[in-house]
Image (cartoon, rainbow, N blue to C red; front, side, top):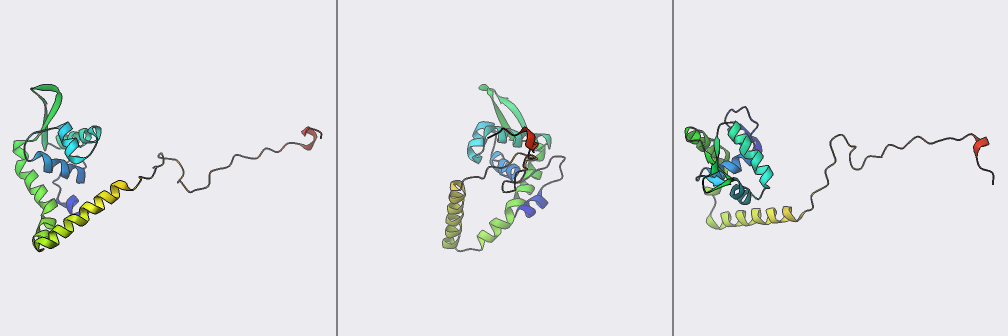
Length: 158
């Protein structure tokens, strides 16, 4: 699925991926604040701000302060890019929608229930502590410090 979505992405100077698709899915329904977008996507405000910045840099969305509350930023699809965004989203989600359309309603319900259960299970799984870049892998032996050898003459007497 990921490769298919990547192939469906329009040419852009920015590297766009699944988070960008998910954000555009939410924004194409109309303007939304960055905070609301973060809530809908279940991501942090910082992460969503980066996703929106990528989409803005690529020319797909525009950002402006909320006239009612200038601390909030509103995001909307750029009108000139609406057709490109719709084509991209159709290309990214179209295959899944077509496959689900071939299923009986009870099969679709079972599929959606299984995906909901999988998502809930994955949220329960503790995330591994990722090593800092450049540090040794977690199970690799730690480099030992060189052993000091003392001349026997310097040992304390017993």
